[in-house]
Length: 115
Length: 116
Image (cartoon, rainbow over all chains, first blue to last red):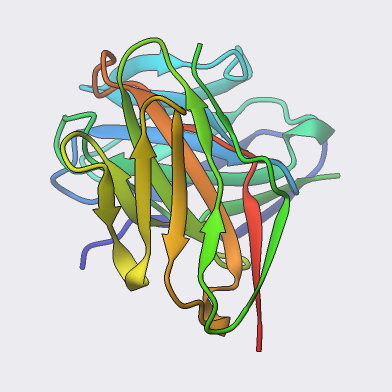
């Protein structure tokens, strides 16, 4: 069964530094999403991406965040200047096809720790 | 705005007994409903979904869920619990009116603990 992969599994950074989290979605999927989960809290939607541009974003996704698909396979989330409160698990996800009926397949996540 | 409520932080069940994990939702239109399971240090795994049709949907690992429109609920159930079912369970919703761009809205999760 195809799966979503994410790298790194754990990223430790200093406050104010830039980080890039990487995801390789399932190859024939068209929509891509980023979610985050602060320790002990619920999973929160950050942003969706379709046809090389942002489709929807939540209020969490402010100017410090950006996403891009630099090539045909990778999907990245960049945080320009990390804050302590950015410490969380970050999950990439994609549904099969374009229908909202389809379940999203999640990657294993990247644990970001901001010191 | 859409929302999901999982009223129980933790559910304890003895192995072999039936289990229920509760979920209620709120959306403006008709809902797409999902259950996911998360094991420690792992991503979310899809269990089952409700789109339309039969209110009782069956999913992976013997789980099922019942959609109740009047009560806006989508409780997760299993007739006989296994110790290996112990994990964190998330209910999620999206509005059927939205396109593929809409993210899922998750509940806060319920820890399911199955005691041998």
